Structure formats: structure tokens, C-alpha cells
Image 1 (tube, rainbow, N blue to C red):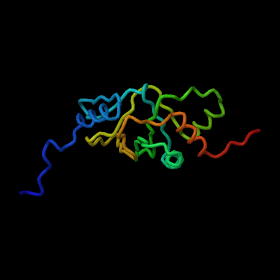
Image 2 (image 1 turned 45 degrees about the vertical axis):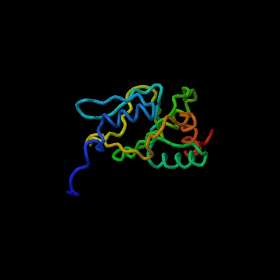
Image 3 (image 1 turned 30 degrees about the vertical axis):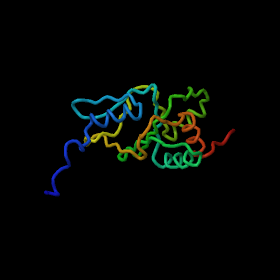
Image 4 (image 1 turned 60 degrees about the vertical axis):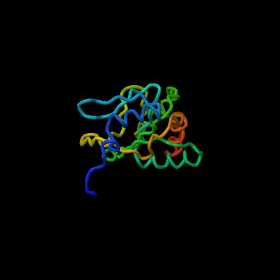
Length: 159
């Protein structure tokens, strides 16, 4: 037997098999771009909160302490960002000071548009990896992720 040969095709992951896993096991409304193999989904039923890696690591610890798991988190190594996939339960923020605080910290709430997920096909332009993979239908509350992010930010001084 040749031990250097590739695994049988049945064991080779493809964009289609990964997309089907995301749909079936994680209830993520994913589609595949036929030209690039990129896997995306429309935000709506599922939202996202993106933030710099350093802040995201603190948020993940805070959520772990609360027992919120599993956390589906996508890493963007080149951009130094993490994206938490969340339930779309974040209400619009009415307080301009809170909006400014999140903007300054580079925390972005994604309510609409496309969210790209890791694909088994290498994409030199958009490297993504799972920090904590989506393995089930569970997604944390977006409001709780945002609350934890705000709690991890430096306190604002009031006038």
C-alpha cells in the first residue's frame, strides 16, 4: 500500500460537503460561489459581531465563564479580527456615546449583507479559519456578545 497517496475521494472535504454540513448540522443558510469555492450566507436569521482579535479573546473568555458554548467564531488572521456568529437579537443602539465607543473599538454588528465562512478551498484574498467551529445550531445571543464586548472595553469618563 502506498502511504503517500491522497485519501479516498469520499474523505476529501469539498466546498459542497462543507456547505451541506453548515446547512444540515448548523442551520446556516450557506451558498457556494461556483467560481471561487467561497462559502457565504446572508445575514438576517443569523447575525455576526466582528471585533479585533485582542478584544475578541477577552470576550470569548467572558462568555466561557458564563457557560455560553459552543461559540462559533471565525478568525480573519490577516485583518486581526474575529467574527462571532450570533442570533440576530441585537436592538438598534440609540445612545450615541455607546455607538461611538463601539466604533472606536472597531466592533461591527453585521445585520445584513454577506457573511463569509471558512471553506476547504484556499482563498489567497480572504483567509478565514475557525477559532471555534460551528458544530451545531446553537448561536449565542448577539446582545450578550455585544454586552460582553462593552464590558471588556475601557470605561468611558462622563462629563
